[in-house]
Image 1 (spheres, rainbow, N blue to C red):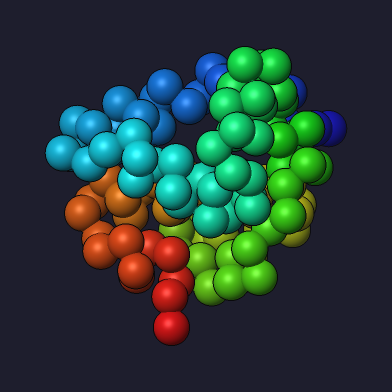
Image 2: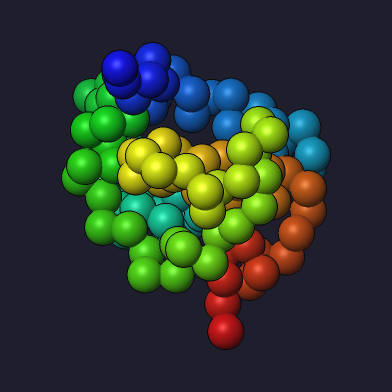
Length: 115
């Protein structure tokens, strides 16, 4: 059985991500940077996905995941990301983890897994 989040429009969750990072003094630009780093989308593609109310499943199906995405590890919602079997759920949790790290004030070069 597919998880409910797979059919949820990305545009429904994006404002929650934005509120989370802004509450901690970070910016929309920083949020968009991590989303674009993970997915390979540019500003126009991200805006299109938001306007079209693309589901998470469609959003990640269209993405070109960053080759460093597997470096995103840790626990989200009590589950270790690297132990998730479902590739789509793992990708969604990658995004959740990046948003958490931005909100916690982690330096962007660390969030973006720069060398």
